[in-house]
Image 1 (tube, rainbow, N blue to C red):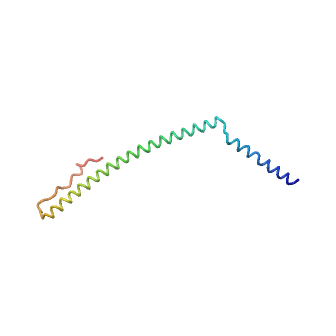
Image 2: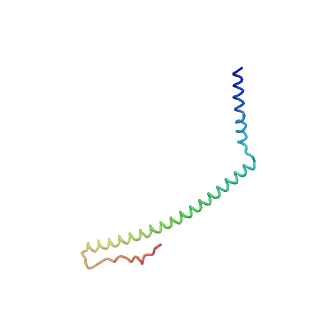
Image 3: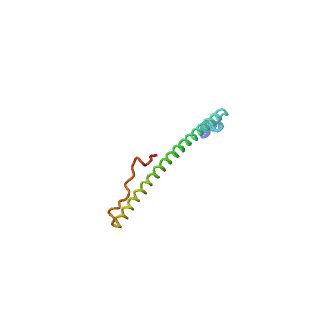
Length: 110
């Protein structure tokens, strides 16, 4: 008899959480539509943020490319001057001097 009593008490304690679990699976329609609307708003804001980040990244990439191009041009000019100096030294021509360094003001800044 005692075992039946404990079994009934245990079952009665389990019934309310099971019914609450079932109720949680099917939310009311207004709540469901509100959650869907909020999720859509969040998704739209995330999409807009991603577009802004992509635009900023594109701008930075263009700036980096322009700086790299300018750096490459400076390296090429330095290499050309070095080659001219080496060629003049190889020929033993001390009178022939290579062209001087270009003005910093003459190079366009991006």
